[in-house]
Length: 446
Ligand code: GDP
Ligand code: IMO
Ligand code: MG
Image 1 (cartoon, rainbow, N blue to C red):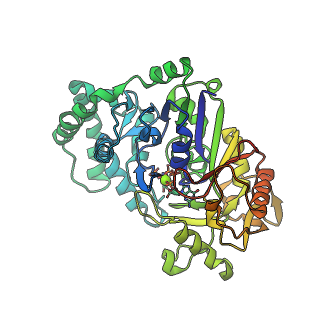
Image 2 (cartoon, rainbow, N blue to C red; image 1 turned 135 degrees about the vertical axis):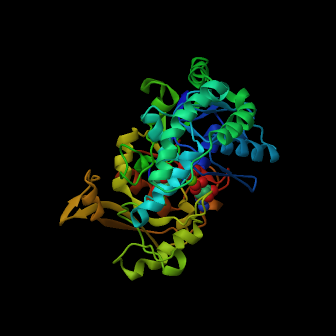
Image 3 (cartoon, rainbow, N blue to C red; image 1 turned 60 degrees about the vertical axis):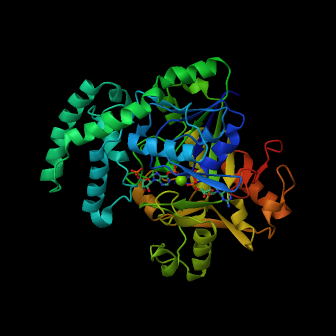
């Protein structure tokens, strides 16, 4: 089983970092295939927390080669800061390979992301303001600068000056901002960043294929998630790359036949950060979340929304933004199974339900009086989809007391069997806490 993809099945923050770290034990290489430092992947090892943005989550194992593939967008300043902070904690990034074909995030991307969000006002997307959208837009417009350009000051200067002409005109004429100075950017990117990253820049496609040819186990680590996918998510409230499993092929330069196993990560509930439709969204009390909970919801649901946010620590890994909570949505998951051809699901944070009397699963939507069991393609339809819930009994047991392969309490096993039946793929792993050893391996049973 050489090549595996780990992909988010909801709106991000499902616990991809934790599961990647877990699965990476048996891997020799972990490759990020899309996104940038909009990601925040948390790993908790021996009580120590690591919040990774760009460096692949396999980095904590000395035997792993971490790779940033072509499809990633790299802010070199952020990458260097992350390498340094990992080194300060005793984690070496010496083996890190950064694709020379990956695109660079430049200061004007971050600036334009921030300004366009501000200009949109209430209609903003709620981006991470890290320059992700503008960098991918330049890539598509063929005016982007790539990581390999850091190795050639002349080419870097020529491309930067050409790009800045247009960017500065936009900054001045559209946003009434001061122009950015090419020399300052060159000093920082060529003078400071290039010497630090030079040894890491390479041919990521060859590195990945050499590993696959040698029979090594390679893991492709998705960032963001299926419903933030540019083509398949809730557009325009999406990111600007393709997190779906097929994105691993494009972003890392492998063909579909190279991939054997696709693990979809799903939380036992759903969260979303940023704007956009969310059928199973639960209201939260104004105190807990600044009053942005779903409108018109049953006040009886208030407590559970607050409970998920506070007990689940549902705040952005790096941004600190509060996440919007909701019940598990099997309609979304069925679509994620299709879009990613999932072979299995790893369900994280089941421990959050340990204290609940009952647990809900959305099995269908009611749309204009009709029962719908698939995700509607039309955004307006999704906006007024009402969740139809099945309520299951809770297990009232501390799941962290169940060891790696131990038997689950009856109600928890029934819950998982119910979800498996709904989504049509086995749940091979269950997360019972943030720590590396807090999981139950069900692959034997699955
Ligand atoms: P990612 O972006 O998909 O990697 O997810 P994040 O790291 O942004 O958010 C997931 C959060 O849940 C992190 O704080 C993890 O430490 C935590 N986490 C992951 N799996 C579990 C689990 O099974 N139980 C609990 N309680 N926390 C978990
Ligand atoms: P991980 O990998 C959750 C969301 C933003 C916004 C939209 C577009 O930790 O799961 P962008 O900055 O990408 O242009 O923002 O996507 N978003 C995420 N939400 N987890 C993430 O990453 C996200 N990365 C982007 O909140 O709604
Ligand atoms: Mg995250």
